Length: 294
Image 1 (cartoon, rainbow, N blue to C red):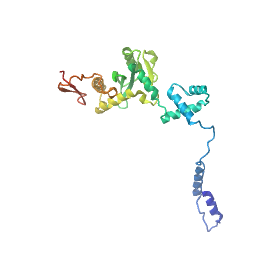
Image 2: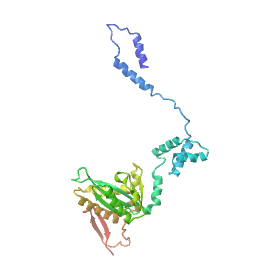
Image 3: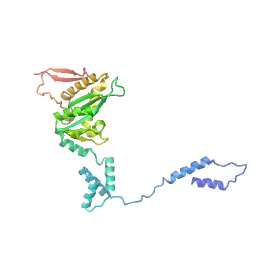
Image 4: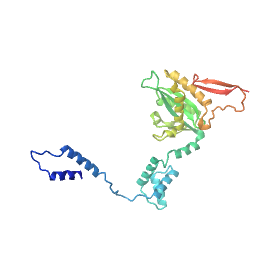
């Protein structure tokens, strides 16, 4: 329409030496670019197959939610049993959209896995720690946590988290906890480690899903906020001593909200008359309170 207006103006305009153009070429081109963009912004009628009904979409989502191990083809075969024909591409798209919108959540089946294996389930991870003299090579704190009790059953500190380091850690874990299950992520050496050489089971979490290893992630957060963030790390020995003292406090005296705020070493509640005592932890950063024996 803007071009037509310009042409209409030109209709009554004669070019001579006494006249100049009412607009510049640049202005004309810019208006034409705007018109071309508007041309493609008009709504277009979608072509293709008729969209699936809402009831059918909800049925597909329900099948996936109640059968988390089923893929698109398995769901397609199940629908055929009840005389419903849907392409596996459509099923895959519906499931993908349902995951993105939160209608299906990864942790539904994961929660059931955790609860059914709770008494034999452990998780491991690394926590990176910068020091004054480490430069671009930080220290790494490796740990294994027992999920049922929130107890750290093993830890190690290194500046080279390579396969040899993991091998030594897993040999110790295999000796003390054979036949158990260990959760880990897929970063670094975890991804290509030969777990088949050991007697414990291993479970890799999905990429970009740290909540699937939430217990280990929560310990990393506690270690940082309650210990490491309050100290300047100068040496390997200092770091190991700090982590060792914190884990001693964490395993025995620190209340854990996930298990009803009960420490792993519960204090007898019958003693209510003894004098209250205080025991400093980590040079007074925390304190453990208890009563004298009656």
